[in-house]
Amino acid sequence: MPVAPEFEQLQELDAETRQAWSAYNERLRELTGAEYERTEDQSWDELQTELRRLEGERESLVARGTDA
Image (cartoon, rainbow, N blue to C red):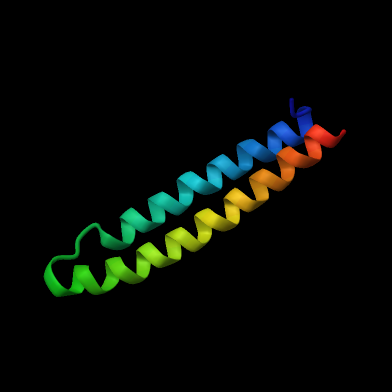
């Protein structure tokens, strides 16, 4: 079970995850057709990279918390 500092850091990671999804949605919001397709492919790749980074941080944080 994470202690207070880890819990706060997990909350920050959750907020960053929500922000990553919001940024992805915002980039695509008013696009259509070919422009949407081009932008969506790149945006999706960027989102997945960011989500993997955040998940790695989350796993590391939880592992440190269980080692304590």
